[in-house]
Length: 223
Image (cartoon, rainbow, N blue to C red; front, side, top):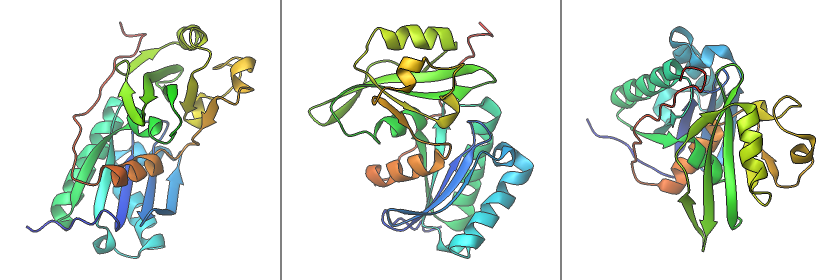
């Protein structure tokens, strides 16, 4: 089956591993539809229905979608598997490419300034997953692998590098998660709850077909 591939076309983006997940439709470089924070986005029985809804309300037909970007994690094990399986099924049925996108790296790529940065998302009920990067001479370098930790551990690690930019899902922000000092810092960037739009835009940057292996991380409370 011939696969359509148009990096400036219309992208369906799926993020199903973080806080109920999110969907986005991106046409060119413009986000034309979003669904965020709905538990059904990460439930197998409802994900396809939600995809139908957002496509019908934006471009009208699945056949108007040129490619699919799906989060490869980290995130909920079950949620990630549902999202990846759905993307693979739609890719095969529609004859279009899909890209598995590393979530934390795509978040880091939203910030073009030089220097150290940490991307962070909520994982499980109360813990966090985060990864450190550095942009040097325009290139984004991974300093650590993705890892999970408690809120206390995250605070202590961030305080070791006060000049670090923190790039976060909105579910991370709150008095039980970060200190008042960090909340008031202009080094904090809130990406909101729709991370599907973030991975969709990153897939545009990548251009060619790219499939990341799923990134599964263990909860610190299960070790």
